[in-house]
Length: 236
Image (cartoon, rainbow, N blue to C red; front, side):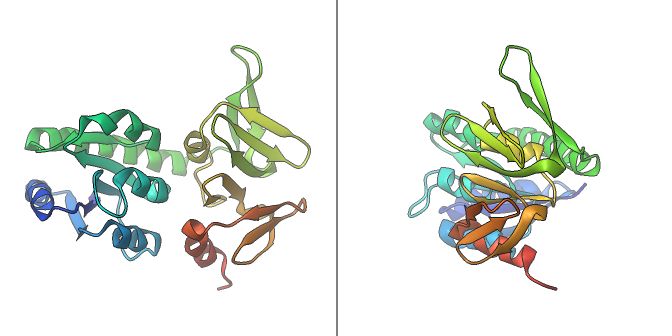
């Protein structure tokens, strides 16, 4: 399996090092390099760059790596590269594959690639064997609730919990939005706002600001996800 990597760092020499490492490995391809993080985000969201993972510096001007990851993690895997240890705990809240400290050694780069291969393989298997249901923790200890994905209208996240809505009721879970997004990973569901995931088969109509569902609920469509949503839903 070939791995496509996009490098984003405001220091060229840091990308030069990773490029040199990648050139030693036959199944790794550098599909782009960018020193401007704001431009790099647009390239990913607009599909100008199609990558399996972005190797991303954290401490960058205008747009830091942690904020960057929050905007693109639904499209690419993220590996952080930084000279600062203190961001490590927060990085894993963004479901990062790995956290590389600069200067990155070749041996450590290989370890990161292996983690990335495992993540991509698991993702591929998950897409191929997509289930028609998900399980979430229930109210009592050791209990769980099984939901059919076709019945889910939308998911709404807050700071401490996530609510999953169906036509008949709502279910509260302590899963994070990232976790639920991974469970629902398919062409049927899409993140349309930092706080909302919608079932695309439950949409009645949409405009540049809102998405209207079969139950009459309108969901906000944020600027970050608008172009991807419109490209996916526009008439062919």
